[in-house]
Length: 444
Image (cartoon, rainbow, N blue to C red; front, side, top):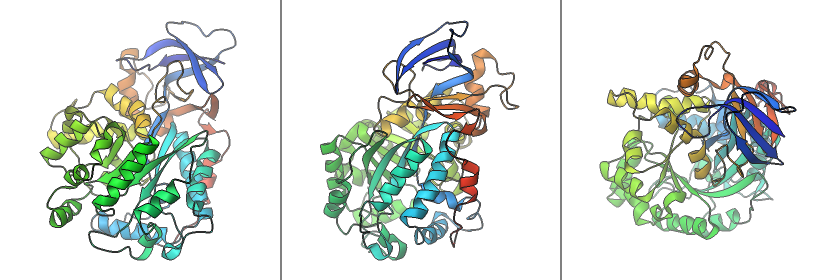
């Protein structure tokens, strides 16, 4: 198969005109630039073609909260209670339906890979299902239905807080011990388009000894580790009270930072200067979720300082308040403009890198997120004739797409050499109908 891209971003400072991409099976076999006209028999992709976007942090089930949790006054902690009410009503079938619709929306928005930070493992009261992998299987099946690659980040969650047991809906998250978590998580193997990773929910939910076990489990399997880090000031204050240090320092003491480039810290909003230095020295990827961090009143993290310290940046949709990775990418920069009074903290190409190659690496797909020979044939084409992008000039097209484009401008999406989205429509799912038919859960 030959694809002729009117313009394509190959990782450089500008978009290249007239790019031919040869695809065999699920892989790109060749890339040629400067081809003025479509070769005979090629598929023409008008607009700007990018590598597939990688959503590095997702809680798919929270899609049912969109528009239904805005009356929750207070902070993140008030919103969390509404989220727990949803958790209490999930089962494998409901989770599959919600995730399939959410993943379908992601594909329509140009995402070809998603990292699902999965911690709702068990039935009510923490009782394992007859098949202990039932909830994870529901997510894998949902991703397969939607046509998106999945990294299932099997997340360890052992306590409700420092010296606090799991209570209520939280009991569904826990395996009882880190050894039981490792045994259950270790039963899942990678699939053709799914991979398994390790998650530490947070330092408040996993003690240091258990964190060390999770990190060792990941190293032995050469997989990646993700952790929520310093999302809220209350998390930092409680960690200092319990351990006399910041959550980042506690990760260091537990050996989690030694995972190095395989570690992704999600949010990293409330950091001390020494935390930034430690994360940068370890090469830790930082996954920012600006729409969620704003929606939950979490705050604005020091992404500029983190990038300068050596941390690669990725982005995620997290709570699904918005599913639009172009919006997440630009808001990384726009939030820094608000926080610092300076423009241009993150160059446009760095934001694209966060949404593509770095996101893929953080999810254990280092071969993805680029348009190059031997890379997966995962591509997204953004139309340039919408009211938002019409008139974009060739030298400015990357800036225009990143700062004005939306999920609604995505026209074509290819995953593994197959068009999953053509002309803005999903090939297999009526995603709007799937979303409209989702169960309305009490508290959502």
